[in-house]
Length: 168
Image (cartoon, rainbow, N blue to C red):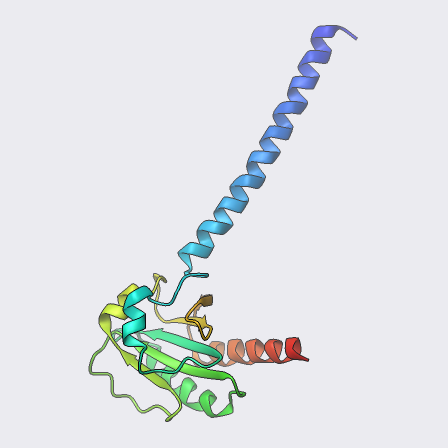
């Protein structure tokens, strides 16, 4: 084999390996960006939240529903929260975060309602309605857009079942 041909083949292999390594690094970087974009691993609302949440007791896992006053499906979601809240296992709770300081929709006693537009804007998800899973330290573990009461029911059912399974 000609040394020039061997050199070109080796160089081509090195370029392919470098390309594959860069593609893997890019994928990891994109995953990290999406986690930050979705707010996962961030403290709920930062310092603003610590002031606004001081009256609330975040025991266990809190399903926080971020809703706004222009949301066409938020009334359905509030009804779903009212239906699901009494059925949650111990260590789980619901909270509603609204940008409307005059929010007055009926919710069960165990559901926390936060009516703070500044805190609403500080939540690091760019969509509403959104469901955030927040632990007792205020760390956001998961976020997802939520478009219907049925989707909320399905997600909460799967999340609580999975958590109960992990505790066994």
